[in-house]
Length: 84
Image (cartoon, one colour):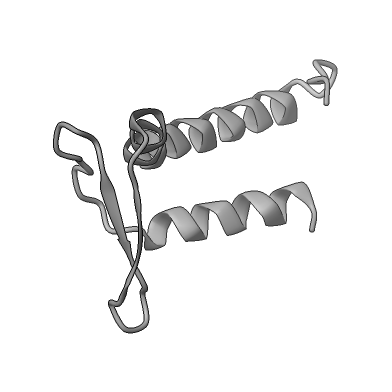
């Protein structure tokens, strides 16, 4: 998969996520349910893991915009190569 294809796939997955203010109760747990039948799959209990999942949509949005900004900048100024 090429970089543009990979970014498009990431954007498609992100756009498929319901935009809710993701939250967890204090004590930080997130329950996970299967998309097809709604059956319980598991629960994330670790505070750091919960924080990662809760912030993931906003973090991914920022990262996508940063990649697009950098690609646009290098398209306008191809002499400014961005290291891999």
